[in-house]
Length: 449
Image (cartoon, rainbow, N blue to C red):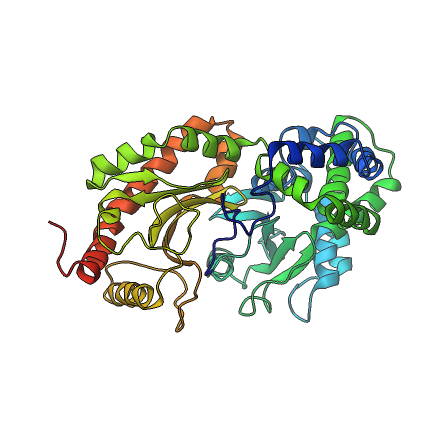
């Protein structure tokens, strides 16, 4: 990705920037009390009512969805659903499968006894693994092993599905086991091209609809039933597309885009608290990097979820502070950006800013040379350098899984900040000397020292 997409504080091209507090207050009043009030009240009513899953922040927490779905699938857990939910999911997989993707028929599933089934969570990192052992006196009836990979917002990771398939093939050989592989997403998004022939794309929304229909014919009640109904309602309201809701949301965004973007940037959440601590205490990172690598960072122009730092040693080099990004404090050609990459991820990047074309090209080509030599790693390489921003070396200083695990254990923002800083200082201690060598050799003709 060539240009950072997060709002750039001070940039004259961004929507909310440059507006006075009075003007912003007027926009918020219009949204809540003026012309937008009717639409906004309708939206509030749409999401009215208490939902325990929303209350604990589960809506897009993949780990928590996985826990609850595992609970529903396991007939030996304390709920009244027996094997109904598991069978509904497997029948949906069969209905969506291509030839030879699922080894059993709907009738086979209907008559299978799942009383001995094991529904495992994160075995060999597989989200959900359904294991029905071989049956019969001598195990002559083949067992069933179904690997389920769940994706709510995240994308499929490289080689992830192939690794899981290999694990199942090794641990549950076809001589004794039927094997199936389910890629469970909100809308039956298919797996990548190389995995699509093995993994059956199933929609969580379709599974919920099918199980709702099954429940309608059963006389079930009690806490587990009420929890499932709350979960299903959350999936419908928060995760499934609805035409009426889509039209309402589009109308509100069309009328109040600037106010909504500003509210979204400053929304209170754990991730926001992490950035707030880092922004209010920049010396936490500055001191850690100085102690680890000897380089001095200086806070630069930032926004709520994108923090920028210049490198003081570089700003002292003639010709370095000549970026065309006039809104930055240092005018540095190369800066560090720590930004919210979405879904709980925080990225730290070296970013080449707009500036004189020849100088930028020389810097970029020198960085490419170091990357080819294995001294550093950079992201997508381009033959033609974009005239605006170019992200070079990057890393996740907080991953989605780390963030979700922190949410599950109710970790504090301060705890996450310490983890982020620890990763950042290690990443920078490896990479800063290489970038320093590039800049000094190009702009001064000699290395640091």
